Amino acid sequence: MIPLATTAAQILKVTLSGQSVQIALRQRSTGLYADFWLENNRLLSGILCQDRTWLARDEATGLPGDFTFTDTQGTQNPTYEELGSRYLLFYRVGWL
Image (cartoon, rainbow, N blue to C red; front, side, top):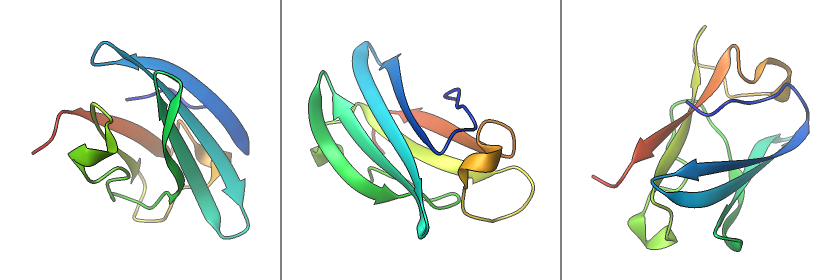
């Protein structure tokens, strides 16, 4: 699980699978969106965050694994107000 703050815009820097990954989350009127960098290279931008939906979806993105949000109280898409409590961000190592 990746720790999140309850702010409408945040940038996280984490080491995953031995690589530096940066995640930017931004709340907009149409939902929560994510951008991903690996070793300072932007790989994905403007990904809509939905409940239990993989964000990267393909090894070709260059990321060392995939990410998904989970609503711990139902099946709503994440919003910033409850990030880190109701809405959790999980990382899965590697690709299936």
